[in-house]
Image 1: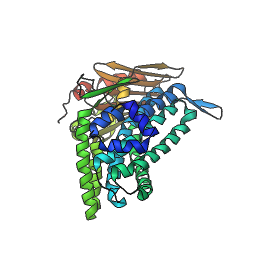
Image 2: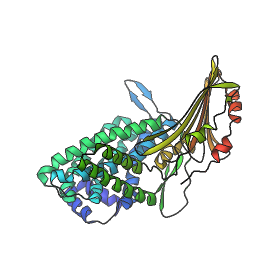
Image 3: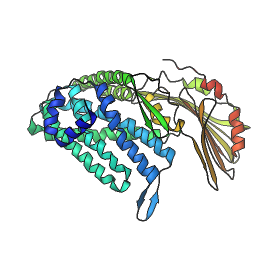
Image 4: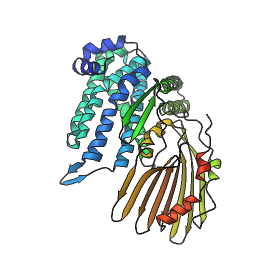
Length: 413
């Protein structure tokens, strides 16, 4: 499959191209590797450049998204767009019998993957924020592409293709809200985890994004696709029996597989992480401690939070373990590979590498606030924030933490 020729064909001659696609034997992993991971980078990178490099303006006011925030948003959006395509394919496959079609998970994936071409290519308009509306129009053309592909791939009657398309879009909006919630949690969660390097294997496709090397393992994509297919079958069986609890669990398994939950190993136990929260930090007594494990959408997270304080001086200590979820590790990896040295009259921000880990320091020169974040290679984020604490004092407090011991924790597979 030639990428450029396929893009031209599906955009200019969709009705002639869909029957050709229906006869192709490419599997999910190869479509991701040879088509989607390339096209999905277009809107992600274009949006980053448009909002963080060029900047947007409105009513005489211009603004730019900070580079680090832009990088995180770019990679999170990139990963979730790939996830969204598979989720929509599962939905399209489940709906097929309702509209007189035939269920075929591979064909449903082809329908959504190639139908999304217009929207993905149209993302190039995000390079200039003022033209981003043209990208929306391109996305509307993707709806038409899906409509024309339904009879050829899902074998549904043409007179039912409009309703079929409409329901897919509505379900897609709902799924988008769910994934948007996940995106919001990630982008608000602070710095991300260290991303492993590329091993040069032919099983890996490496794309250089600004500030990082993003490596996608297509072998794991294939493994994840099999898990997603199994979870989708469980969800359909539960829905047929009217078992909403089982259907909800299956949906969670589906999302967890899509996000790569568990492929990075098991999350660290909260009580293990709790042992790294000292009783005293920076000369301040501990006033609160919370260690917890959360499960959401098939993904598991462990975290520890401790507060220290006396009078107007306080320090907040946080540990977050997201290393068991490779997609989140990928999404947050841009920060770990960045180098930043920014200084204004009132604030200083630095991002650098030290002792095999990424470190971020951000503080106000008047000593009112300081923050240090460290991204460990095993996927644990350490964040220490001080109010009424100068940066030198916070560095001294962090030096008393057993960061090396925490970084050396082995993750069980």
